Image (cartoon, rainbow, N blue to C red; front, top):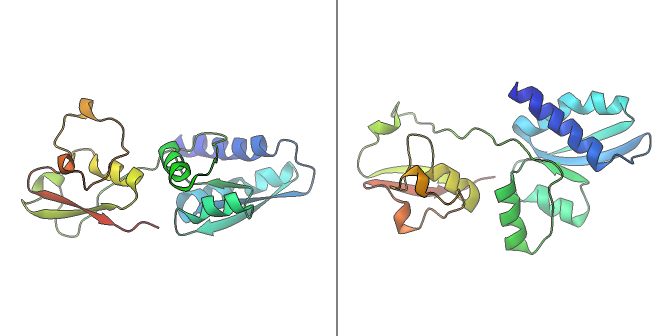
Length: 179
């Protein structure tokens, strides 16, 4: 059901953004590979039937899709959620706006050494994304809240891991490069 909803949103995005598009018009959209570019590939034939050719540009980082949208190299992008976009605009003085909401990707933890968060030993280092928005999401992984505060105390997910109050006793949240 979530995939169907995502596909509907993407198709709506394309048609809403270019509802006045002429037949045989091309829409250049930037997206991260998985799942966003895959979803766009799925809706591409549907949009083609409406006379809209979808040119999908795949990115491996999270900055270039916005930078290229600002520079006019892209007509739209599909990969980010609102807090990330707001942070991008604030940091770069841009005024990009969302057309439709984008689903939020699941955020999970992986390890080759432990099989449960409660098995983290004192002094363990946990890598989280280095951008402030997703870093905040990493700090709030279900069952692994590294903030040491009750969930009701959280003021959203936009926090830096370097803040002293964002450390559970004995666990160190280390920033890892994203994109």
